[in-house]
Amino acid sequence: MPESQVKDEIEVIQFDDASKEDNRKIGGMSRREVSDDTWNCWKATEGLWQILNAIPDDKIEKFEWDFMLKSLGGDKEILSQNNSDFLFLYLDKDNSGDISKPELKSLLNLVVMVNKWNAKNAPTNEGMIRAAYQYALKDKKSHSMIDYIIQMAIIDTTNTLTKLLKDIRSAKAQYSVVTTAITDGKMQVFRNPREIFDEHIKEHEEIINKYAGPMKKLYRDVEQLLHEAEKEYNLVNAQVKELLNQGRELQRLTDR
Image (cartoon, rainbow, N blue to C red; front, side):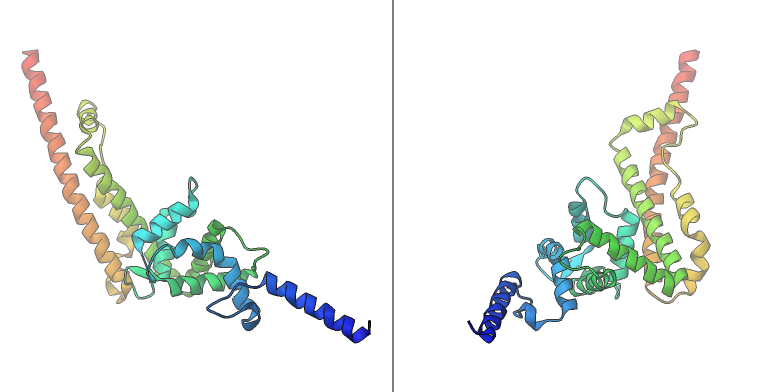
């Protein structure tokens, strides 16, 4: 067989094998019609997008984001609630309360290229989310450290107050907790929400009030959450005080 014919046959075999390997398409384009970076980004994030695309539209709301991360992590936490909220806010550039899939895809593709990932060395879905968080954290700190500090103070305060408010409301149905507090006069059922607010965010109040941006809106939302928590806190404390006074009066009558 002539050498040129052998060469032609080898080239055809190699092309056919490559076609079998890369027969998937991106937006109607084959592997040979896109750049290596584009192909690597698509292959490295393919598994994650199979999950994300369960959300029907291009918007991902906060409750969907929280559910997605918990679902991906299973029994293990991918990111703490504070870090998860930070990553969501980092992606929510217009402070709309939701993020778009193109915004998320842009960040994930950037993370893939920075880490030089492809189909052969791509991380798990959980690893991809953690890497996205690390990139966002580094980027935020390097461009605006004070912005990051205030944002995390707001996130931490919001999550702490939210948990406190949930606990207080739960205590309404958990009378035994209150009863224990009556028995033990030194026991405090709940932390004063104002203490939490002052501990985490009070020192940034002056800067926030001068800050004309999305942080101010987030801060106002935390203030509203504080007012709700204080209202519930004062109500429960008044009920505890009333029960305590009744118990003391009953004890006085018994001792007569």
